[in-house]
Amino acid sequence: MLNIVLFGPPGAGKGTQSQKLIEKYGLIHLSTGDMLRKEISEGTELGMKAKSIMDQGILVPDEVVIGIINSRIDSESGANGFIFDGFPRTIPQAEALDDLLQTKGTEITTMLALEVDQQELVKRLLLRGEASGRSDDANEEVISQRIAEYEDKTAPLAKYYNDQGKYNGVKGMGTVDEIFSNLCKEIDGLTEVN
Ligand code: ADP
Image 1 (tube, rainbow, N blue to C red):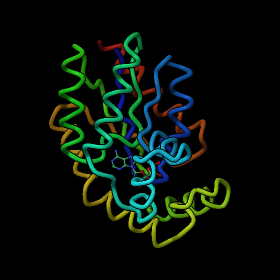
Image 2: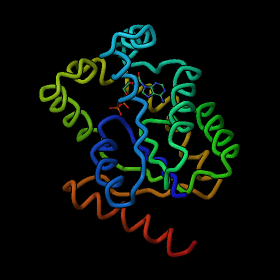
Image 3: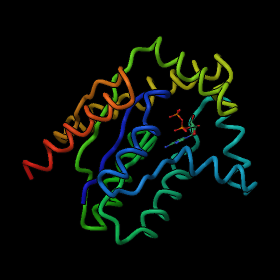
Image 4: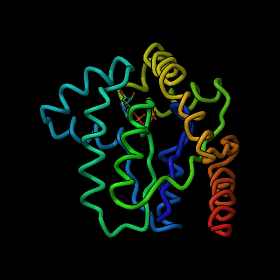
């Protein structure tokens, strides 16, 4: 299996690149942000709890996202592999994911980390807020809070995967196609070795 953690701060382009990667490599896209927004739009109890947390720009509890990822992985047993987008976001989530994949006889192949300047991130998120109406993208204060959460809780995952020899930084500035090509080079390099 090819199991990729697509990593990077809010606005790094993970969702956009995931769409292109799943097509090229036949993978399944698992975005916890999308899954939570689906719960919100369906008005489930979980969705209602998550919405107020997400609108503050902070992370929903680990056990909630681990639970939804777990059930999705179970329902996709025939997959070639997965792209994890926006998950894991904390060390306990990464540990839970390692354990989960181990029980399925597989593991994370690589973390691909999109590297983007801070100024560019805020610009992209505000633009996305205007276009999509996503409430957590419309407000600069919420965006700053999300970036602070990222620095505090999520950035340490780079070391976690680097310690496993799985961290690969990828230039995340340029056109969508240029960034996609940077990602493909990394993936193709890995699969040639294996
Ligand atoms: P972005 O990548 O732009 O930050 P996402 O769509 O991935 O946006 O996530 C939006 C919000 O959903 C986050 O700010 C957080 O509140 C919640 N969320 C998504 N994934 C997770 C996760 N793995 N752990 C905790 N909270 C999450």
